[in-house]
Length: 402
Length: 213
Image (cartoon, rainbow over all chains, first blue to last red; front, side, top):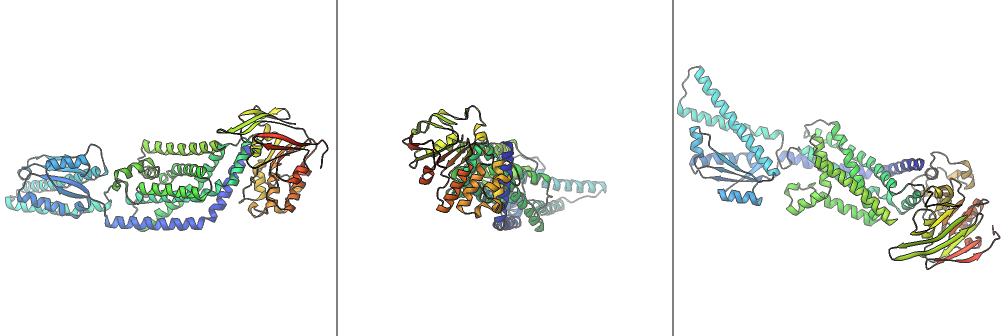
């Protein structure tokens, strides 16, 4: 049995290689097209930073003119506008909005806010956040910490100036000091925009545009490459499989060999795309990270899982147009609901639910997390679960047919 | 000797085989005929160990295929209706799959099936008759005593049918057994015993001791 098993493995590799080279041109064209779209999208996205701003409610009880001006200044800043849309409401409106999910968060400022600030009192500002963390919460948290840091910087500058004045025994005029503080404040605020330029803060969380689009493109291409593996499941191959059972090579072994063979070629495809994306993104100066071994290694589990998926679909549908259409349909649904074209966060609730059930989004998450060295146990468990599920289901179908 | 005793097989509620009994002594060609869907292929698949019967036993030279798992691979060569060949690969690769040995096949096989000229050719480029010849060559790589052939000459023209029949006759060594599922009159004529499968049962139509080979 072992010698025949080894021969089968060699033969399946050989003929897949032959078929692979036959379809190499169309595969390359597909990769180039998807790569071009990916790089183009990432480039436009990166340059325009057209993130959908999160909705933040703001309740201001202080109706002083100064407060109004300060709010206008903050909300008109481009960097803030790109991230948040402030919706003026009252305290009750903020709570309702956050609970219903219409608002990603809320800020409630007291009626003495401006006076307290002016008098140097540590005035409270209440921040309202939803119970469960969302990407919007992350953005708000990031913006707030940036804002606090900004105020600290300004405060530090003022203290430094006062200390310097005291050291040199210089008297500072009260009215002039206000103007200087305002000037320093405005300068600091405007320069803070540079901080946001280095990395886009968006619903993608901590991942860069490069990471997101590369991972998405790899998943799209390797899933579409599955259509080419149909030749492994023809009627003649079933005759071969049937006959192999005489030698003890049952559905489990033939399934395993198919998955191993497909994994090799899926990995190869993913690897080529990963390298091409790296070179492409580097050329456009979008990528700021180096290619790490983890970027390559993380392709292996995803390739195995995708190969198991192909094995299942082709075993169910066999080498017919039906199975190819079935595969294509499943892939399209997975890609549409998996945030490959529209980020998951922008999908309606039911769309998100679908994306959580189907594995495509999981594959991308795995690639993203592994690249960042922040692989979650739940993501890894999901990959293992789907791989075993598809493989077992494929073998089950084959056995049942027998 | 092949001994088949009270084989039964159902798919869901449909009874395909309703207690099949058959004995084929060494040196015989046994033909099984019958209408489409009568269960001929199912019987041959049970005999080859591909599917398991619900009841009954199959023995080759006293060895039960249920109890001794390597019995079938030791004694039998099975040719399914569909050629078990991989079309994208060469004849040599296909033979190596079934022999479990890489490289050039045994010279005896090459000579017997006249494969020298087509050894490096892709199976997909061969004619129907040649493919069937290669499929039979793959079936006999271990020179088994028993050959189970499912419609070996189906869909071939007269020339290729003759060629395949000649291979079958030549192969039948003293003490060997050929079981053929067939619709072909010539194959029926050249058989020592002929059985017809009808309503899940096997009826003997001809039984002669003299060989027509």
